[in-house]
Amino acid sequence: MVNKVILIGNVGIDPEVRSLENGTKVARVRLATTERLFDRQTNETKEHTEWHTITLWRGLADVVDRYVRKGTQLYIEGRLRTREWMDKDGNKRYTTEILADTMNLLGRRSDNPASSEGASGYGGSQAQNGAYGQPAQSAQPRPAAAQPQLQSQPAQAPVMPEEDPDDLPF
Image (cartoon, rainbow, N blue to C red; front, side, top):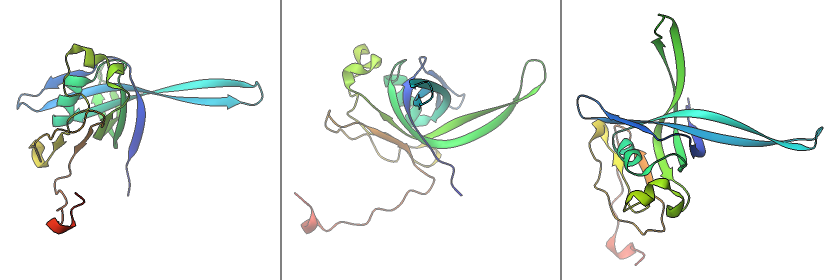
């Protein structure tokens, strides 16, 4: 069975980032995606904007805290999760959100509102979460032109095959 969501959109308000009592960081982002639909009867293009709540944990939440602001364009991969809660009147309510597994910062560095706040390294590092929120690997520098790919790893990360040093492309 598959539960996968892929979104590209713009952040609508500054993210909400907090730390739990055990120190685990969690971020909530409101992301807007817009579809443009052409109505042949009226000969007009109409727009439909959908708002999504994205939840990011640990390393991804840290990147959100450092680099994501209102207006930032994001690529998100994740899965749908519906949870229930009680409102202040005691009514059972439901909400559906996306638990992000991957987040890419899109657009140019100059397009990102957070880049003007001294966010050095924007587009220059990779962060991953391993099992139980421990870093799977340290952040490695990458060329500034490359966009970071940020992922939460499953509990069992795949094992990379050993490479023959004579087969390396450089």
